[in-house]
Every structure is written in C-alpha cells, then in structure tokens.
Length: 253
Ligand code: IPE
Ligand code: IPE
Ligand code: MG
Image (cartoon, rainbow, N blue to C red):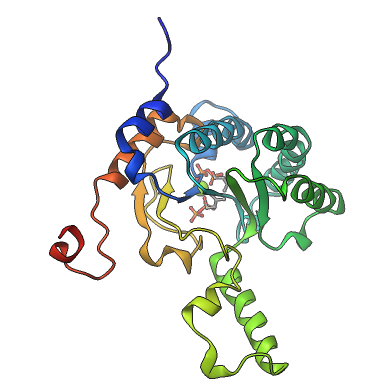
C-alpha cells in the first residue's frame, strides 16, 4: 500500500493557514532515552532524525523560517558528559548534514553566541553559513548557546552603539527599528511556537518574537515527534482566529 504523505495532506487542507515562521523547543530527549534505559545522549542522537524530518516537512508545506532550539545558554550547566556529547553531535551534524541542506536550497543560520564553542565548530558554522547563504528556500535557524534575553541584550547594545555614534537619536528608536537589531531581523514574525516533551514553559526562547505567536504544547518527546504531530500542531494553528488586539468581528468581517 502506498504510504500516505502527511505533509502533502496538510498542504491540501490548510494551504491558506500555513505558519510562515515556526519555532520549536525540541524537548524530551533525555526522558525518552531514560525510558528506554539508555544514556541521555542517545536521546539527543535520535533527536537528529526528528530534525531531519521536521525540515523536510516544513519545506514541503512551504514554511519560510523554521527555528529550532538546540542548546540554550543555560544548558552548559548540565553534566560534562552530556555537554560534550552534545558538542560532538553538533560537530557531526555540521559535517554530515550541510551538503544535503544545501542541495535542498535551505539557508542555514546558527543563532546564538557561537564564540563559546570550539574553534572547529565555529569554523564549520562559518563554512555552512557561507555555503548556504545565497540559497532561496527554507531558512533553518538553529539556536545554539542561545537565550531570548541574550538576544534582547545584544540588540540593546547595538542600538546603544548607534546612539553613541550619533547615527540614531533616542526618539527614533521604535519597535520596528529595535526588531531590526535582533537575531531574526528581516525574517517573518514568529507565527507558531511548538514545545514538545510536555512542559508548559518557554525556557528563555525567542522572548521578543513570542509577543503574538500561537503556542502549541505537545506531550510527545522530541525523538518521537513526527509528521502526524506536526500536522496536529498546524491543524490547531489553522483553527485559531488571530486577532492581534482587534475584535472577532473586525477580523472575520
Ligand atoms: C532537549 O531535551 C534537548 C536539549 C536541551 C539539548 P532534554 O535533554 O532537555 O530532555 P529532557 O527534558 O531532559 O527529557
Ligand atoms: C530548552 O529545554 C532548551 C532546548 C530545548 C535546547 P530545557 O530542557 O533546557 O528547558 P528546561 O530546563 O526544562 O526549562
Ligand atoms: Mg528538557
């Protein structure tokens, strides 16, 4: 029997309501592995399959930006063994997956303070961003050593610098001009945040960009988050009326 392509079905049913920018807090790798009696890093490795799948799905349904939370600024505090396992995995993915992303016209951006990573990771990041920088397909932002507060503070520093240099006056600072200094400047506003793994919190992810995003929390652990689960999230998104402060009558006419 032919395998049903869920992404294709989603496209057919919800083509008018596909989020332009999806952010995902990929949570639950550790608990998934623990349930299987395996080390936490095993869960992170399995999580890479879910990443590959989410990228394929988002390309297929026409999402413009996909932002994946891979490593938070707080995750350094985890046991040494887990942090170094994650770094090895990051290096492996940057070495093995980038060619395929490039072939699929994906623009890869690493968002976060990458100066804390090893020189070899920083070099791979630079090469990957250069290689894929002129592509025109899905923008894949991988948030690594990222925090929403970090992004806001970095933007503040850039604005302060502009004021100090006399390029901008304080009265000219607006929400839009501030947004231009954040890590996701010039990308589509975040439409949909998904968090897997059951927790209902944002853990310092995309704080500025979350202002009017729809939120979808799934109990499914990231290594098991598949097309079916993505379809559930998009179906829920398509079913909400986004009012942006207006009344329902104003929005639906
Ligand atoms: C998310 O899964 C991945 C990273 C934070 C790197 P976790 O490792 O947080 O998995 P749980 O939440 O402990 O199950
Ligand atoms: C958020 O998950 C970070 C990533 C998914 C990379 P955490 O597992 O670190 O979040 P908390 O600690 O449960 O808030
Ligand atoms: Mg977690």
